[in-house]
Image 1 (cartoon, rainbow, N blue to C red):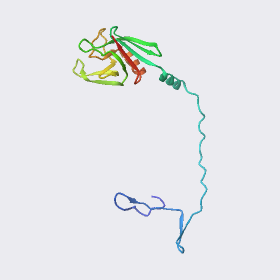
Image 2 (spheres, rainbow, N blue to C red):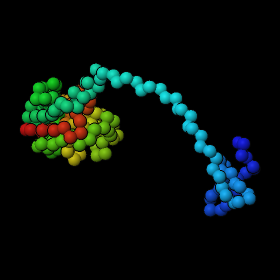
Image 3 (cartoon, rainbow, N blue to C red):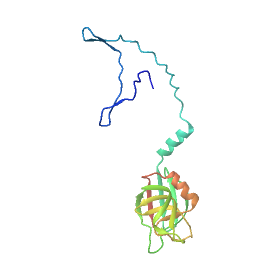
Image 4 (spheres, rainbow, N blue to C red):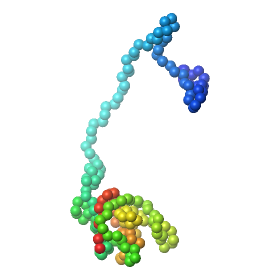
Length: 185
């Protein structure tokens, strides 16, 4: 071990271990006085200069600008279409398939509650009897999600809003938790 090794440390019980202690203190045996060793100046610590500040990169500027944008999603059940806006400008729109009769998609003002790129339904199964896969899921109310799915051209889901794969990925990447979702008839 080190220069102070005098064998294994003694066990003092209760899980504590006594270790040898060294000090720079000397004892004067004649007077029982303790003298401290003279102070030594600290050795200078070599430090490297801090890097100079840099200008923000395009990536950080883009990320900051993206965070400041007002994003919103409007889903029109009557038109079976969605419209995604940033700062009141339509950025993307496309077809949907909403809830079929007996399983309507709720209407109203909602917010993005959660996102899960690889969600599997806890309620519904697919044609093979397996739990339904719901890629790029965006939860907007209770057990209602917008996610990638088949688009037959009419309302055909159990209440979720299905969009095509490219639209689902786009919306998943752009929408943030708390962004408004408006579902209208």
